[in-house]
Each structure stands twice: as structure tokens, then as C-alpha cells.
Image (cartoon, chains in turn red, blue):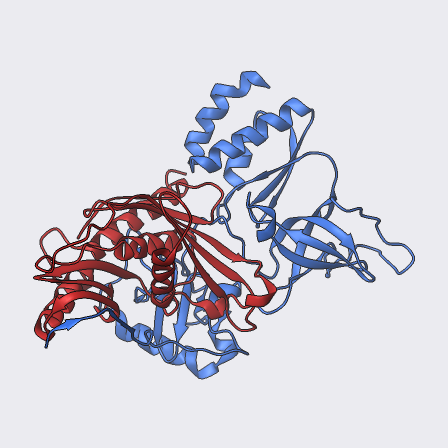
Amino acid sequence: MTIISATTTLLSRADGSAQVTSSDGTTLIASVSGPMEVRPREEQPLRAYLEVLVRPVVGVAGTRERLLESQLVSCLTPIIRLESYPRTCIQVNIQLLTHSRPIKTSRSSPPPPTILSTALNASILALIDASTALRTTVAATDITINKGRHTVVVDVFSGQLVFVDSEGEFTHEELEEALERGKKEGMVRVDDGGDVMVVDEGGGVGEEIRRVVEEKVQRDLRWKDGK
Amino acid sequence: MTADYTTSFRLSPPTSIHTTSEPTLAHHLPFLTLRNSAPSLSTRLQKILYLLKPLHHPTMSTVLLPGSPVSLPPTNTSVPLRLGPGLTHTPPSTITAHHAGTLTSDTRKNALWIPNLTRRYTPLQNDRVICTILRSSGEAYIVAIPSSNAPAPTTITATLPHLAFPGATKKTRPQLSAGATVYARISLANKHYDPELECVDEATGKAGGLGELKGGMVVGVRCGRDWGPVLRELGKVAEFEVAVGKNGRIWVEGKDRRTTMWVVRRIAECDENTWTVEEMRKKVEATKGDL
């Protein structure tokens, strides 16, 4: 799975936003608001309350969206420095724009790709756009091996596994292989004192994220040039 | 092993320090002076600086992602190293970025930070902000510090004591009504409390430009930009008074309404397109006939 197109800062009223289209045909907008006022019930004295809301293309959010929300919360909680924003709320909104509905698949084919990886990549870009303090940058990718589908989320610098969601039929070896491939796709090329570590020709999702962020930073700081 | 289930697990985040009393995150302080908090730390860092010198240094064009380790550029060893917004120090010697941007340094002050453009304002001590009076309580005004053009529920509330005005006593204090726009200095900012404001310069006891802003118009822009050069360009052709709030609000009052609107439009366009001073100059030339 790769990111086909990604844009940041497209919503004027949100603190940060990103629209991402993935090669599996999912397009969605993630927006970040916060740190902002929190509902008294959810107020935490030493950290921010992270709220993720997923809205489907049509209709109201149901069980599928709730599952996605809980997966996103568990992925993003260790990434955002929530303790920097006590007694506040950080809200991540995901609005699906197009999504091929999962078709009932036969047992011989792998389960359809989920929107989790696209939603996570978009959320990370929106969080970076909002300048929310993050511990690290992560990249999510979908890996399909035989009858198994794995969403692998890794730290783009160390390749450390942050989250994995697997579905279908797979062996232990296949899972290991998926993790290895996810790590390769998610990591950025590290310039370590001149030695360039080549990850993959063209780069994976991690490189894509870096490219989008670089564009954003250059756009934001262009006022500094040409005094 | 064949499995047909959904599994998810998560690993602990990369190492970082969690302290509740002493924030290690420079994000909420204008600058974190390492020597003040731990004298030996700075000397140790200086030694590490020396060791790091032969390694790769990020140039101005290198964009850091959150979590990027920062290798320190050669610095001035007589002054303690200071970390500004966007950088986190993890003892003993790791410095990481926590938002995206390019590393900027000031060799003379021995400071490092990552500038960025945001819509969300985080209060910092000594920042001058443009805020709105909400109501008056017993001893202080309750004010809202809005961030750029963000909607109302996202504003920060702060207190502005009745006595924090030049020459104010219990009997004579400025009467500000709800909705008044005030230019104030943040005298106390901490992530755990609501910020406190003041409209008087402690050293001189005078207003020093702070106080109520009467008339004029407020425009919302993104926080983090240096508006000086752009406003000077506008000042070459238009006559106006201006106050720039760090919270992404600029108050403008021209010699007449036409001038005010013209200046506000130029500022809004400049923010929207992140114009350089050169681009602003061209726009000013092209539109000065409207004045």
C-alpha cells in the first residue's frame, strides 16, 4: 500500500488537517483541533484527553467506525505527548470521502484492506500540521500475504513496531514476514554521517510522509526567504 | 500455526522523561536554560557537543520530523545551551524534535529552536497578546486569549488583575466592559494553571503601549511569524497604528476606515499565502491606489 496523494493545511478552521488518498482507493480527511477545552467528565489533571471521531461517507458512525476509533486511539496515545497539555482535549476527526465497501470475500482470498492505515497516516500528518508535540513519527502500511492482511505501524526512525492489526488466515512465519516488510516500508532513509541507508527503491510510506512534511515546512517558512 | 483472528498490541513509547512538577519539555517555556536547572548538565552537554562536532550537522535545509534526533551544531561554550520551542531534552544528552521544522540556532545566545507556523497559541511568559474581556470578578477581569481565527470554545481563559494597570489602586481602576479588546503581557504561564496577564511594565510602572485598544479592527493570522518587516512595508504608504499579539491577532487602526480595511486585507492576504516581504512590497505597490 502506498500514499497516492497527500495535502496538508486544507481546512482553515481546524488547527491541522490532511487529506490522504491511498493506493487501495481510500480517500479521507483528518483534522486536528486542540489543545482545547475539555468536557468536565473527560478532564484529566495531568494529561490531555485524546478523542478520535470517525465519520463515514454517508450516514452516522456505527460499530465499524467505533472499532476504527478505538484502534486509532491506541495507536496515537503513545505517540502524542499528552502530558504536555494537561486538562485539555485533543480531538482528531476523520471524515471518509471515498471508500470501497468491503465485499464479502471467499475463504480463498485475503480480507479486504482496511481504512486504518490511511486514517493513521492522515492523522499523523494532521497532527504534525497542527504542531502538536509528538514523541516520534509513525507510518502505517497494509501488507497482504496469501490469505492474511496485516496493518503494520512502525516508528519511521527506528523501525520499532508500534501497532499491528492482522486479519484472515496466516502462519506465524507470514506474520513475521509482514512485520519485516512493514518495517522496511515504514522507515525513512537515515543519513547517518554520510552513509545513506537505502531502504527501498523509491521509498515506502515513511518516505512519503517525510516528503509531505518537508513540502509543508517549506511552504510555511517561505516568508523567511528573500528578505 | 494458523490463526483466524484479529490481534492488536502496542509497545511502550520510546524512552522519554515524565515529570509532573518540573516540565522537561521546552515547549511550554520560552527557553529552557539548562544551567539553571542542573549545573553539571550543561557542562556535560558542552563536552558532548565537542564529541559530536566531526559528525553530520543538520543544515538549514534539513527538515526535522517529530522524533528526529538533533545533532548539535558547533556552539558557543561560554553561555549555557538553551532549548526553545520544538525541542525536548532527555537526560543525559539526547535532544529530539517534537514538531516538524528546520533547526534554527543563535550562536551568540547559544540557543536552538524549531520555528513553525501554527493556528494554536500556547501561552508563554512575556508574550504580548491581544485578548477580550469576558467579565469582571472580585479582584480581576476574566479574559479570553483567542488563537488566530479559531472558534470560541478553543480559546484560553486568563485572569487580568484589576491592580495590574498603571497607577491602579483599589479605588481607581480602569473600567473595562465585557467585549473590550486589551493588549496585555503574560506575567505567568504554566501548562497547569490559567495564565495571568498584566497591562503595566513592572520596571517603570507605566503602560508601555499596553492597555485597552479602542476602535480599530482585529485580524486573525497564524502564530509564529515575524510581522515587523511586512508592517514596515505597509507603513510606507498608509498611516495606521498597529499592535501585534503573539496569539495570532493583529489590531489595526488606520487614519480612516478605508485605511484600516486596506491594511487588514493586506495582512490577511499575506498570512494566507505566507508572502515574503518582497511579495508584500509588490502587492502594496499594486493596491496603494485604493487608499
